[in-house]
Amino acid sequence: MNTSGSRSPRKAKGQGAERREEILAAALKLFTEFGPYAVSTRQIAQAVGISQPTLYAYFPTKDDIGRELHGRAFALLAQSLADGDRGPIETPECLMQMLRIYIDFGLKHPEMYRIAFMSESVQIKAWWKPQDVTLSPETQSTYGVLFRELAELHGRGLTIDVEPSALTQSVWSSMHGLVSLLIAKPGFPWVERDLLISSHLKLMARGVWKA
Image (cartoon, rainbow, N blue to C red; front, side):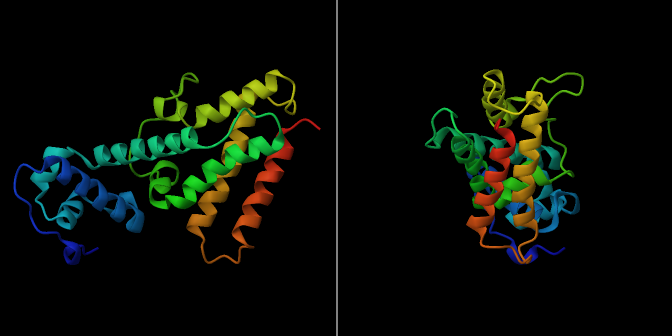
């Protein structure tokens, strides 16, 4: 992989914050195009127009870059959920509206979505500790929102008789599976996108709600 064509001019000292953002932007672009495993810190530095030692002054390892991008992706999704115009979930349609925010985020920010949910090469903080069900702060702000909503509905007897964690993870997996396929397989002969998404959300909501 040759990134010399995208080398940027060197900047004067004292532009640390801007330089850091350039490193993250270059890494995100390279990770998206080639996958995190295939990209080296040398190639990231070359794309930015700096030396490897300079890059290490900002990020000691490639994993540190991956963790920063991963955290930003979750923060952006959390902000989308917070900004979403939705009230309490009282009907299947309300649930569909909430899940649509997740899906729209992934399709609007495919590069960030890949880092958050489709990459295994960059070592990132686990979603939850392997010995218990304590969610990481990033996951509390995204997956945790969905879990709390479905657990509340389950407690009120409005969902099917499935344990809340299993129900949430099933919905989460189905929702993100659709987004991942739409991002990874753009050449597949999909039906009209909005029709596909709406149909998928309707099936999920009906599957969750108690008849």
